Image 1: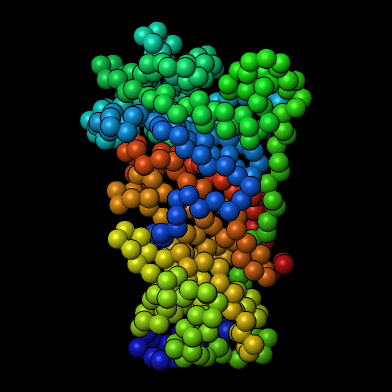
Image 2: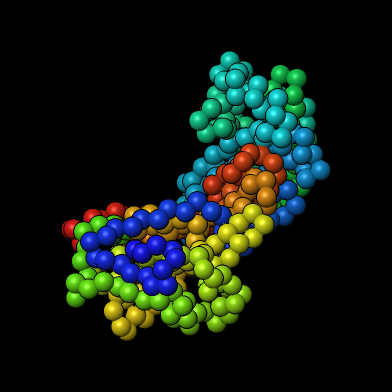
Amino acid sequence: MKNANSPFLSLVPTNWMVPVLFALSALSMSSINHAATDFTNKDWQVVCDNTRTCRLAGYQAENNSDFPVSVLLVRRAGSDAEVIGKVKLGGAKEGAAKSLMQLGNRHRISLFINGQDLGETKPFSNTSGDADLTKTQVNALVEALTKSSKIELVVRNSRWRLSDKGATAVMLKADEVQGRTGTPSAFVSASGTVKSNSKVLPPSPPPALRLVTPDPKARSNNNASFRMKRSELAAMMKGTMKQADDDCPNLSNDLPWRIVRLNQSKLLAQHNCWNGAYNTGDGMWVLNDTAPYDPTLVTVSATSYKDGKISAVQKGRGIGDCLSQTDWVWSGKKFVKSHESTTGLCRMIESGGAWQLPTYVTEVKVISANTN
């Protein structure tokens, strides 16, 4: 590729350029385009992905940021699925969090419900930054969350208060998504006739995708270089958007384009689209290397590209305690969405967010272009 001062863009087939950007996009945290659930009520949130696995995350009351805490309850689909629980103590009270990490297995987190000691959690993991709840603790916690309860996580003389506000609402939503309403396995017991667990919906298999890694030695079909003026390329890409001035206001500026070969006939074109207070987004287009170019827009909020995978990551706010992420993989013909998730509510748990709460998951098999 010629330098950024040149008015022309070129791609010689023997060159392989893999730009990796680590900026942050500004996709909406509530952007859900799949048959999934993302529902928040007060201090609790439930996110169910396309396989019907539901993850419920609860936090401290919003006005209690000195002692941030989060509990995650995970229940897969199916009549025999158990609930597992994890707890994570936040870092806003920095001294307490650091002390906990240093204590490791010598001291564990204790769960208290309405003053009753439910025992210690399993060992705190320095790697994941959380501790698993015991089965007894999970059962007691689920029951306590269906009514007004005082729930505390305790380490020596420090107490983190978990809010129960909104828990029942998100539990009811999880029961609905998984077809458990009125069954024995429901989070919230129903009055009247109880249905059989056989009515519970089964897991839905995740889509199977192929990631075809681009061949760094690929040659164009006509063995020619791709050459186009930056202004022409911008004008062509503008036609892929209904509101280009809003979606990609930086499309025609002097920032360089990046062109990567995907296979013998397809290219990936990348250009900065917008910059926000703490996020930024790049446009990604797939096009033919000869006329008709027929460009197709993948996203205007990309933050990185590497080896056939595009990612878009965003901060929910400037301090970065909550994120959202969307990924696309190259199938050999086009980019296909492979992942979508958030990290939960912005509650000061830790930098990068408390949990991984996917709304869309797939099984991706990586295939070399040489064997495709």
